[in-house]
Length: 433
Image (tube, rainbow, N blue to C red; front, side, top):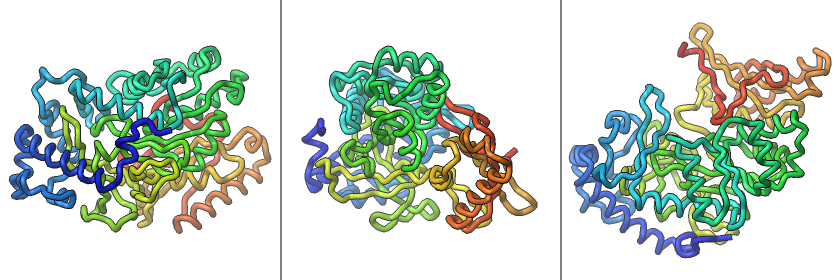
């Protein structure tokens, strides 16, 4: 189900030739048009003409989220404002959002990438796409919207929220594809059960889930509860929005990156050195075709690895392995590195618990502590107290076996953990309160 055969099945030698040509062009542009990059490159003694091979990217400066904040709002733009036709923004932790802008050509590129993304995930012309990603400044909703229309599918632009109304539309409009966060997908299933709706009887065939890390175990739960095939997608507003990479429906074994538009690297976040081929590290992306806000070596903070092995779908584009988490979300509990997704993997393999949890990080004296709060299902909650204690102790043992660190496990009754109609908040860090 390959839509853009020319670029998605390009021999790697030809792809790298295209990447180098585009890398040289973008470095030339930002050096002359973005003062931030000219200053950074001058500090490093690097000129555009020094980029002669793809390996020369290592001489270029990194870009961080803080750089975007420091140049707020429009200091990173590479085109005059009269060429900007769209401004989105990602949420900001300091109260100020991070603006991202698009020229008309950027929007065309984005729409085409999202059409490729949807096609890879198994969508096609004639499908009805229930789009429950947020519209507005968030890039998710409109990214999927224009991609689905470019593909030739019909879009239901329902956005986030109004869960019961969404379930009514899923019944009445009969969409075959749903796109939303994995946590919201599970919430839809939960509310649907309360309404007496059997998702297995709906017309949903494929779900494309992203905007937060999730595990293979969570995929199995989503597929079981929603009665569809669940596909992972990756993107971030700073780079373009959704559409950076996606799993193919044929393999569901890593996310094919649109390498004709994005040049990836994997580095050790501690010392910024490149990691060995196939090893886990922080994903760094250089945009190759963005006009409005091109970025060199953007540190995504997302932890993954890259797989260049051939895929049975026929695409030659590399595959990102499923995100481990974010380097800045990694918890260090008594010297042990812990990602929320690893805890999730243990929980989802435990009978009797529901796919809703939170991690409470606190400090006792000089030591950090971790409490895992996880809901039990209705049947388990009705059991005797002794059985509940045994289950909690079992989860504690599994986590200690996995991480060699002791945590407290608190089983809570169904519907205790707050639900999200957007991105789920998995970690509550009381050390910062």
